Amino acid sequence: MGGAGAGAGRAGGVSPGVTAGRLGWSIVLVLVVDSSTPAVTAALVEVSAEGVASRAHRCTVDARAHGELLAPQVDAVLADADARPRDLTAIVAGLGPGPFTGLRVGLVTAATMGQVLGIPTYGVCSLDGLGHPVAAGEPVLAATDARRREVYWAVYDGAGQRIAGPNVDAPVVAADRARELAVTVAVGDGAHRYADVLGLPLRAEPRYPDATALAALAAERIRARAPGEALTPLYLRRPDAVAATARKPVLP
Amino acid sequence: MADEPLVLGIETSCDETGVGIVRGHALLADALASSVEQHARFGGVVPEVASRAHLEAIVPTMDRALAEAGVTIADIDAIAVTSGPGLAGALLVGVAAAKGYALAAEKPVYGVNHLAAHVAVDTLEHGPLPEPAIAMLVSGGHSSLLLIDDLARGVTPLGATIDDAAGEAFDKVARLLGLPFPGGPYIDREARAGDPAAIGFPRGLTAAKDLAAHRYDFSFSGLKTAVARWVEARQRAGEAVPVADVAASFQEAVCDVLTAKAIDACRAHGVGTLVIGGGVAANSRLRAMAEHRAAKHGIRVRVPRPKLCTDNGAMVAALGSHLVAAGVAPSRLDLPADSALPLTTVSV
Ligand SMILES: [Zn+2]
Image 1: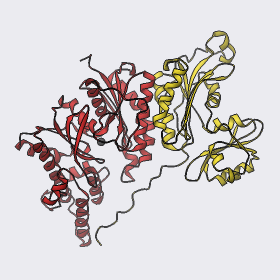
Image 2: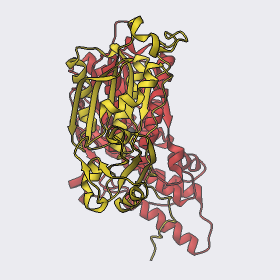
Image 3: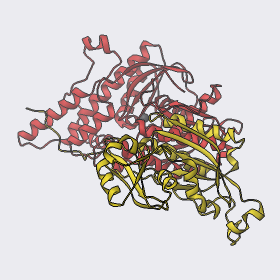
């Protein structure tokens, strides 16, 4: 996957947060992709010493077309921001958990683009892009639809730190854990879908992992020009496969 | 020649992650990562296991291919990728990867047909393909007879298996005989010590009444069952199973049907070239029988070397190179992975 990337070492041992603004390279352009839910998201964000700001954003909700939608959306956000791929400094990808086939589209897109551009790729748990921005002083349950009547879920404390999960369970199991952890609000399309089981007040937004939040969660690594990481999906489930059993005889 | 297009090919339709690089008809790199060992205990390819392996393998396989060819992705003129047919989830990893490479490197991408790529790969070994030609593609996933009028724009399917693929039959009979997966190479090896005439196994869809409706179609399910019955009967009688004879007689039945129908197709269409591809094309008896029978009718048989017959990235690059040379327009960035991509669609 993407190596340490161009520009590693430019910080010269000085904390980039301190000198960045003065040196003038503080604002960097970062691509964010997430395909862990029915929403296919591509965004360009600017990461500076001061914070993270969205430059361009495309999101389409279509659980069956991640493979078709993501690349044109990446192309579109680059065009919207009048940028070219070579202008990117890093790529942030939602690692899931999420339905496998769609999830892989985002990760392979990020990994291959990072490889070509020689820039680092950073993974962030996709549920963090739901729970972190919502957890303003109160614990929150973030849940997305895992199909098979289950949810992918995690719990965040009032400061937005993940304190449970990511896991995949029946909604009732997530509800029990949320109650134990004194959760007062739930967020995410999984929470909406199973609102009656969870019995928690719902936040309407974000419904799906928020791209700017995902970038913010990787911002420290981006500013420090930390080495990129291999983007390993959070599958949480084993592949459906059964070992070959004894062959059935054909003779009666 | 340096001014010929430099084309990269990505293949992930089944359990092999392949990245190939060609310049014109010259093969520069053919890097492969296989997940076949992860599937062995399941006795067949598990789609989700294959998809996971493709995601892990694609970047390192690309690195190896570029190093082997001594080029960078900036040097590449076009990127081709298998968009179908194949396992949906596995195809999707390759298609998304090709788009990622194409986007980042600002190169055109071609979504291509896996079966047409099996035909195109032969140009890397034997040069441009005379058209029209007949192609026979036989593997664990497909058994097809095609009329190749114009490899860049369309091929005509003549026939295909109506049940098991030829390679599947090899795998199932191998398992019956206690041989490892994938079964093809083991059956081939055992058969060398056996008598191909020892047991008269059935030749599917070769009777006159079947030929009327299925002249170029194949059926291997009945053959597989016949082998199973024969072996079980021996076992129940407490007799040893003559593995070499069963393997040789089974292989003979498969090769007999395949070559008879392929030669029939060549003669019926007045075609002088037969290309054989797919994993089963590596079978030594199939090659020998096809050449022997074709020679009688003045038909030339072209079979690429075994490594190019099985799924690989070079075959996709070869087809991509052919499309670029023929002036075919690239695909759009929203090109889908299509597990049932029809044969009549060479590029999407
Ligand atoms: Zn194949």
